[in-house]
Image (cartoon, rainbow, N blue to C red; front, side):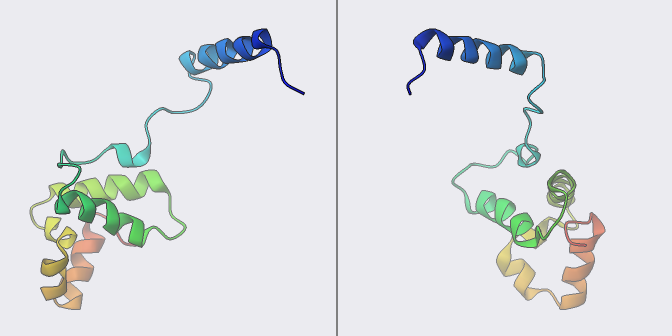
Length: 104
């Protein structure tokens, strides 16, 4: 059975009010906190791919905060460059991924 136009508008109005009151949860997603990268750049693809590859049953907010700290640290940001990461020995890569806990 189709709902009436008035019922639908009433529900929409209620949802808008609940959203404005903050009762529908946060508006900011964990991955919204990221470096200002050109969306179609390789660096952007690498930035968003690495944390997701490591996201195994983990708090997303903590993961993305760690990714942001890792990317902004000149000593660890190269883990987001596949060629640079592949050239590192395993211990160096491990240390860099663990420094800001992008890997656990």
